[in-house]
Amino acid sequence: MSAVNQAEGDTATRILDSAERLVQTRGFNGFSYADIATELGVTKASLHYHFASKAELGLALIERYSERFEGALERIDEAGGEPPAKLAAYTRIFAEVLRDGRNCLCGMLAADFETLSEPMRAAVVAFFDENEEWLARVLADGTADGSLQPEGSARETAQALFGGLEGAMLLARPYGRVDRFEDAAGRLLASLAGSRAAQATG
Amino acid sequence: MSAVNQAEGDTATRILDSAERLVQTRGFNGFSYADIATELGVTKASLHYHFASKAELGLALIERYSERFEGALERIDEAGGEPPAKLAAYTRIFAEVLRDGRNCLCGMLAADFETLSEPMRAAVVAFFDENEEWLARVLADGTADGSLQPEGSARETAQALFGGLEGAMLLARPYGRVDRFEDAAGRLLASLAGSRAAQATG
DNA sequence: GTCTATAACGAGATAGAC
DNA sequence: GTCTATCTCGTTATAGAC
Image (tube, rainbow over the protein chains, first blue to last red):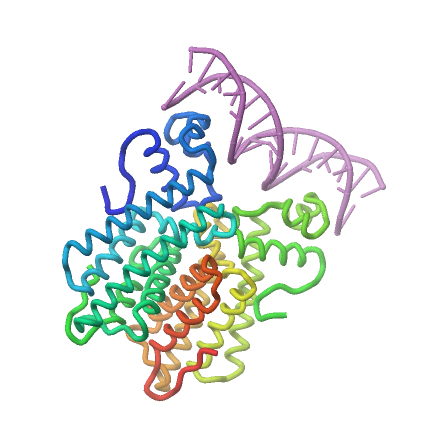
């Protein structure tokens, strides 16, 4: 199992796994319950037993994705590397998603935003906020220990970094080139380089 | 009329205007012929007379958008400003689109990419290529006259800049904050600052 | 918890009158 | 060039048997 991608399990989990991949590849309005049912070999009615509506399924999708992401960020923190290494590890999460042929779940949902239910919208924005807060904290730590030298506030830099990564993912898929993302991520991290430590983009 | 947004005209043009706004706000799979027909006060059958299929309509949409964009880029070139001013003018095109509550047409279609027809996919990638080529040319000019100091090749920098702008647009809409885009765009341009000229982010 | 069956509606698309 | 009418299929969702 990868850091944030799918796992095996009971029916509800398998439904989420299938739907997650569909949203990450086709968008929230680019798939139907029939697609999931066919893939899992069950009926649409069975899906509705687990997730009464598509909006409920969508919300569950974002919540699970956010929890997994939070877990991945905690593991990076617990690994205890320096701020530049943490940022490099962060970009590898996205590279892994891309290598699986997918985009960030919430990056896709940002495009579909206007068509989403209110609970889904709030959950998407919460995901972005959590990511930017984590990044801002790492940037602040790096500024304090001299390993990073962001221009401007940590929060502003975190927003620009996160946006840069989401944009690089968005464009990498039409080109079918993960290295397009990796190059852009490497550049973004390099632009934050401090005077004290070397960069690692792995 | 704005640089790249809609205009008035005959029925085909009005269909394109309506569909364009729908794609830019809801995505290609987030609207139907019925939405356009209702907005224009015509029947769906009439739409099919002008654009036989949704894929044909989508292709016409990208082609018109690309032509308008090329026109906007030519006007920037003809205005004869220095490279930093050209980049600032370029970001203002996107800010204008965002202020109208829309995202970049092709940024939205990049998210929907997997669900698009082959001709639409090719047209989306062509749009990206044209933008990156124009940006790379401006970056090369700026490097030559000392007004810009990109790190790495012009082409690589152009890709990162374009991705950064598309990502910033993608995230600005869920937050309903155009200034989120403007801040990110200002940062991106500032990071390219040369030793010779001042920055303008307008 | 999964099934069959079906409702109720919306989608893209076409035929042919005007 | 636009209309009415219709087709066919896909969509979300529900009722009720097993």
